[in-house]
Length: 68
Image (cartoon, rainbow, N blue to C red; front, side, top):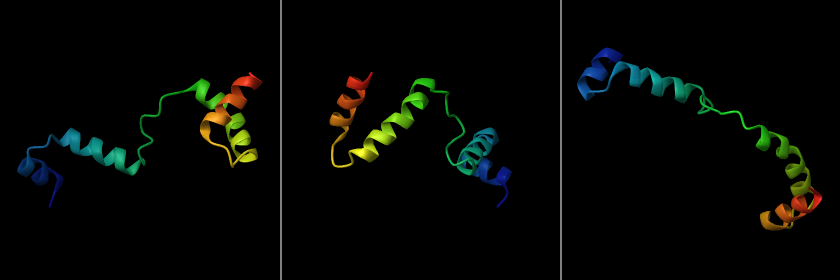
């Protein structure tokens, strides 16, 4: 079935079909907003979580907060 026929049959605008297709092919990473704060904290959080893997997220958060 062609895209034109599919969209006509189900009442979907063709632009919506191509948008859904692009999002699916991009692996849902199409609209990733820049997050400098999260990106800056990602490495220290990962190293602390790896070092203290037996502790939960609240304890890790407190350790990071105490570190500054």
